[in-house]
Image 1 (spheres, one colour):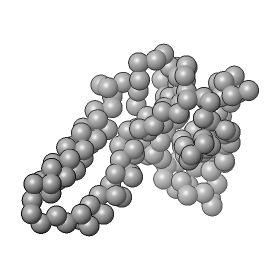
Image 2: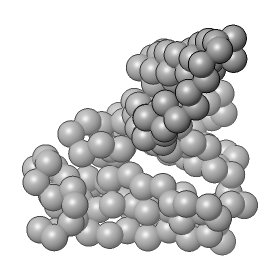
Image 3: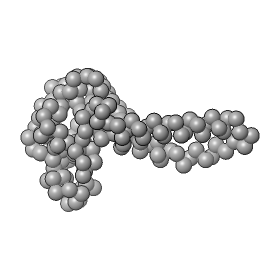
Image 4: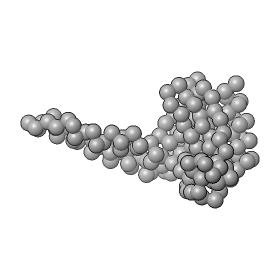
Length: 159
């Protein structure tokens, strides 16, 4: 998060990029990502205290940890962040270096799209899907000019 951002550079670009349909992304700084940091810290503290408690308890119930799997898998959604930096892409709670990105594509958001209907700005926008070696990342783009700028930045680093 300390690297210089290549995208978004302006406030208009920031407003046009979204991780969640109703809310524009925040800056990738610790000050703007307080919610994600706090949720990660509380969850990890709770799970680690539960593990320590079970280690010293005579009744070990490891099956109780199954209820934490969905929470841990969706914890990355607490980070409302998307940025392209010099060494790769920050998306949610993940950083992916350029060498691990295989491809990207823009899908138009139409009436059959899963994000259609959440916000009027999103209904005429695009979903950017970035394919990596393991899994994909995505963000929503609500402006045509921002989409063109994203294409320029991604093409400059991927080809």
